[in-house]
Length: 84
Image (tube, rainbow, N blue to C red; front, top):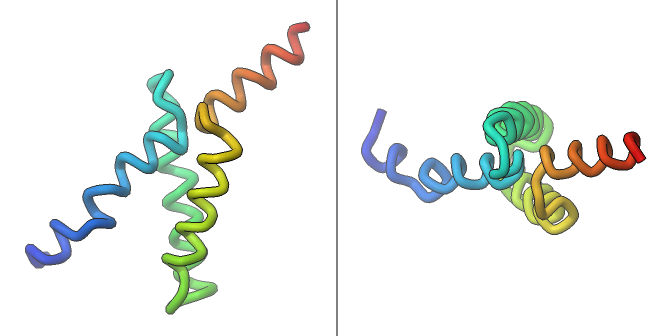
């Protein structure tokens, strides 16, 4: 562990992005967001070792623009459509 690694921008911003991706309106939203984004990040590191952060960033921006309520917001919309 180095201080530079612990206080880098990605280390401090990543939990916020995970919570936004999962959805802030529920307890499970950030947990699901963290799980999905961790899996995606690790898969990208294996496939694109030098450009994974760029692809990861593009995926994040697109996902947040398409799902402003996060993954849990999308799940709630689908459940409402099924009920009606």
